[in-house]
Image 1: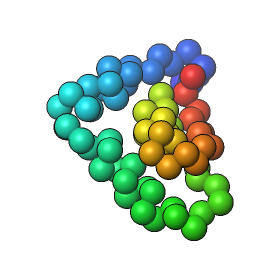
Image 2: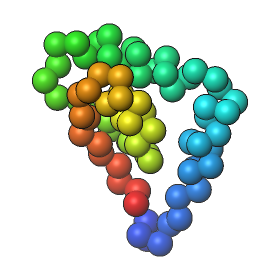
Image 3: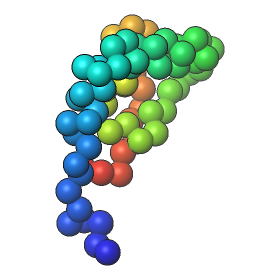
Image 4: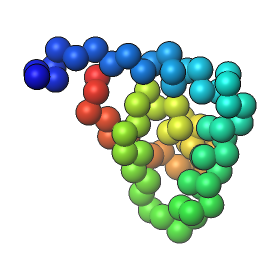
Length: 71
C-alpha cells in the first residue's frame, strides 16, 4: 500500500478528545511537565496536529520538537 495516498481520518477524534474527556489533555501535559523539569529538549513523538505540544508550550514555555509522519 502506498502511504502517500492515505488520508488521515483522526482529526475530528483528536479535536473531540477535549469535548468528551474534559481535562484529559491538560492532565497528560501536566505529567509531561512534571517528568521533564530537568530536560533540555522535549520530543512529541506522534504529535498529530500538535494539540499536546501547544498546551505544553503554553504552560511550560518550553518549545517541544514535534515528530509526525502524517501530513
